[in-house]
Length: 403
Ligand SMILES: Cc1cc2nc3c(=O)[nH]c(=O)nc-3n(C[C@H](O)[C@H](O)[C@H](O)COP(=O)(O)O)c2cc1C
Image (cartoon, rainbow, N blue to C red; front, side, top):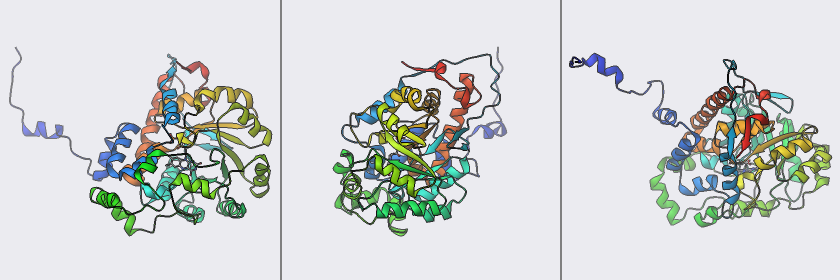
């Protein structure tokens, strides 16, 4: 028979969970997020609905985005065992430079709407993590201010070409002078995608104070307080406003970008050049013929064409066709380390994430982005170890198939 006794208080006290005193309440809440899905749920509670929907949403029926995510759900790994996986190195070499983790922060516009600190907060975390940050033409921090705020971060600049080309040229020169090493030309945005959530929510640029937005103020006083008491929320490199972001893309940027513009950019930009938004094997081949340094297979996170195809599904063919001529990158629908490791095994040089870090930004500013990186960092190492590999160069198609 087991003898029973009353426990002493000194035995019970250590069992009661207490917050690590070095963590703020926000950091403690972020620590309890175990996955990017948890961070997304926290983000949803902390910003007005129209802001969350602008970030989370996609175009039309959102099939492109949902297909991209479903493609990652089809990933099936074949782990190998009896290998020494004590030391794992998840770094990759991207366009000539080593990056500590196999993902970069892709360009996202209007970032100070998600959190008042915006791009500098995201770029600071990128610098700490040793990964690149791409500033968008639709950014809310200027190329110079971001460079001054985070001089140690590897910075890329994403270009949308304005109709007059003159201001685009000026922007490109400013990016070069401010130490950005790679130019990303986004080519999937001849016109803006039709984003139904923004239309339904009345999300315009700049945000309008309507009866419903005023009502939302009561629900999100911290977000509104930050918005109204810091510098005005506006695009740093654009003066046009009016309508939804989709409307603005159509109004301001040149729908006539073609192969000649690649030569024009080569003439004014001495650094590396990436084409973002390639969605077919044929266009990847065209990009190789045009001599760009890299393509990003991307459907813009499903925010442009609805019912589009899925980058992950064309990745192996693109790598086979052009992988010896340029580097191939991928983004869209990545929400876990398994997604990242699978894309690496299928041949991408590196991955880019968009929403995943924006969920962190909405959930907790810089701390939230940091939490996203720490979740992915730990998961990537674990997934690689459980697969039986210790470096990204060990990964190949023998480890993964799409069911
Ligand atoms: C809120 C938001 C804004 C974006 N803004 C831009 C942009 O200004 N330029 C660009 O090339 N891509 C933009 N993108 C697309 C991202 O760079 C990237 O292709 C996409 O987010 C990847 O999908 P994921 O969000 O599922 O990771 C944006 C994406 C989101 C979610």
